[in-house]
Image (cartoon, rainbow, N blue to C red; front, side, top):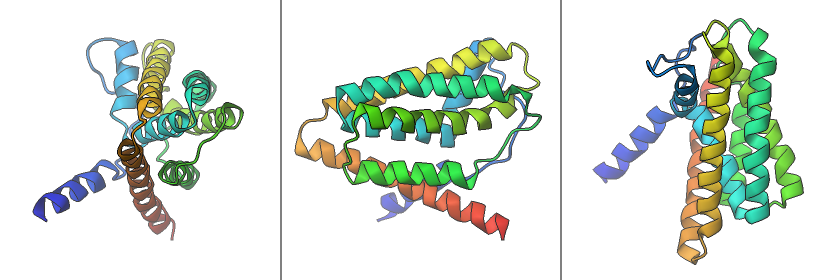
Length: 199
C-alpha cells in the first residue's frame, strides 16, 4: 500500500506545474543539446510526445510513420514562428485539454488512421511549439536549439510509436492503455490547477 502511495505521489510531482523560465537550461554542451534537454526536462512536453506516439502506434505502422514526420516538423516550425514571443508561457488549458483527450483515446484503444492522426500531431506540435518558443527568445544559438528540440521530438515519437506497434500480446495492449489513462489523469490534475488559478 505504501509503495502505491509513493508511486502516486511521484506521478503527481512529475505533472506539477513549475515556474516559467525565459531561458533554456545550460547543459554546457552547446545549444543543440540545450534544446534537446529542454524537451526532456519539460514534463508537459514529454507527455505530449508520449501520448502522440502511443496513439500513433495503436493505429499501426502508417499512423506511427505519419506522427514521426508531422509532429517534429510542426513543433519545430511553431517554435521558429513563435521566436518573437518575449516570455515563456505556462501550459494553458487548451494544451492540457488536448492531452487529456489523447490520453483518454489511448486508454480507450482508439485506432486512428494516418490521415486523421497527422492533423492531430500537427495541432499538438503547434500548441507545444508556440509555448516552447518563449524559452528561446534570449538564447544564444536559438536556431540550433530548435534543431535539438525537433530531433528530440522525432526520436521520442519514433521510439514510442515503434514500441506501441510492436505490442501484440493482449496484456501488453492493456499496459499501453493503462499508460494512456495515467497521461489523462496527470493532465486532469494540471487542468484543475490551471482552472483554480483562473478563478
